[in-house]
Image (cartoon, rainbow, N blue to C red; front, top):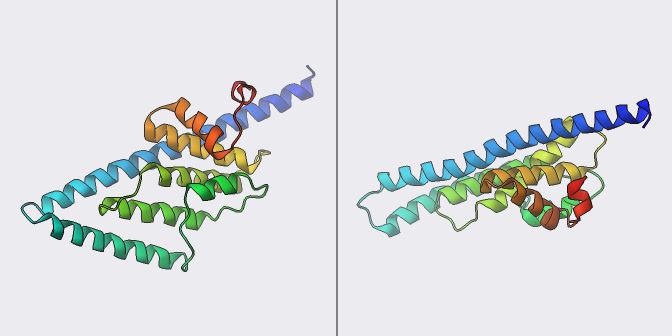
Length: 188
């Protein structure tokens, strides 16, 4: 191995570690904040409405959540919220077309919905937020990686933090988002 090859390998390795650490930290804080915030708000609302009929509790909390989601939609000028299917679609584009503002607003709207008691999953918004932070990092720190690697790493970081299982996040990102799972790509 020549000295030039060693420099390229070292640069690639350090860039991979840097991107992984940034996405891992961001994904961990996002996942814990999302899940903990929902629990805190739900517990507070239950204490606030203690002794009231359940109908009144759900009517008020879902109405407040609806208003928050409506104003979230106004921020993105009526464009549709994004979800996991958009993450899969964006991971297979060769250019970085992810709209970071829509991704963040979609995650915040999902947070309001779940906090108000709506029937929405916790991990779908985390998957799309991982896509959003991966795409944002690609724009801010444009190493010589393709956008799908940033998106896959962001999704893996969010899912790993949400479930507390790093290998589950890695396998999910490869199988569901990148649609490419091989032993060679994992062991490389």
